[in-house]
Structure formats: C-alpha cells, structure tokens
Amino acid sequence: MRAMSFTVLFDLDGTLTDPAPGIIGCFRQALIDLGHPAPAFDELKWIIGPSLRSSFPKFMPDGADVEAALARYRLHYGGGGLYDLTIYPGMMEAVETIRAEAGRLFVCTAKPEPFAKPIIEHFDYARLFDRVYGTTLDGSLDDKGDLMAKIIAEERFDPARAIMVGDRKHDILAAQRHGIVSIGVTWGYGGARELGETGATHLCADPTELAGLVGRIAADWR
Image (spheres, helix red, strand yellow):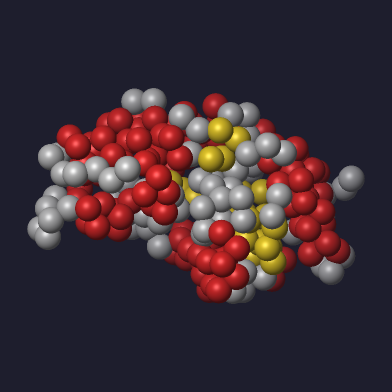
C-alpha cells in the first residue's frame, strides 16, 4: 500500500515493549545501593512512563541526592537491564502494517535517548522507524510535551495529521498540547481509566486492533 502523508509517534515503554523487569529491577537496586528501602516489585509498576528523576524522591528522604540515585540506576540499566524486557504479542506486526501505510514513524519516549536507541535496534524495531527521539540525561526534555515540540520542529510534520500512541497520561497530555490525535493503549501501565480521564482521543485494548484503528483515523485525512 502506498504510504500516506501522516505521521505516527510511538511511546516505547508500555507501548512497544514491556520493560518492567529491567526498569523496576534497576530502580530497586539503585535504592538499595544508596541505603534506602526498596518497595516490592509489584508496588513499583507505576514508575514506568514518568521521568525517574521525579519518581526517586518519593522513596528518599528530603534533601537526598536524586542524581546519585539516577547514576546508580543508569549503571545497572546500561549494564544490561535495558534488554530485560519483552515485546507485546502482535505489536511488531502492528507497527509493520502501520509503517506500510503512514508517511513517517518516530519513537517519542521519556527514556533517555542513549538507552532507547539500543533497545529499538536490538529488538529489530529500527527498520520500522525513521528516527528515535528520547529525553536527555540532564533532564532538559523530561516533559514529554517539550520532547514532542522538538520532534515537530525538527521533522516539520503537520500535527493535525499526526497520531500519538502511548500508554500513560503523559503521552495524552503531550499530544493535546500540540493538537495531535492520541491513541491510549490499555495493555501498558496507565490503564483505561487513567487514559480516559486524561482525554485520550481513542482507546485501544489489543495490539492486533491498533493498525486498523490508525487506518480508520487516517482515512479522514485522505
């Protein structure tokens, strides 16, 4: 099928991949390294999506060095934790179908770019995306709306002919800020309630339904 002139942005964690073992495991180890109590694994699933710079302080005393915790996390994560994940069943096929229909595809993730790019390459997603955009290690792009603004400015696509696919409220709010249609995917870590209350334009419950939904949205732009 001939590519059409619309753009799709994909979140990474909780959308393209299930990164819970690596992210949560390294988060817990960073707290332990610095002598702080580490909550149980199942109590930390909510940290997937937001900036970890905003999550660590919730488990550390006032005045504790958040950057030190991030450094320990990155040591463990970069040492192999970033590959401790799975691809959601049907997701690769969905992206392949969308790739054949859309003009351009980009990854738009709150994960720092030096970690996001190797993951996309290692798990064979790189062939499907024009570019991977992630945050910076210094935190200057931790707001996903700011990251999205950078992508729009550099890639020069029309936000009115674009779709953001993500699993957390941060994805939806960023899309709203730029007038982009949003698809909230409920197989990730936000869930239907969070995504619906935040105002996702559409909800999608299964990766096998995603390409069809994108196609129906794009049909209005033909």
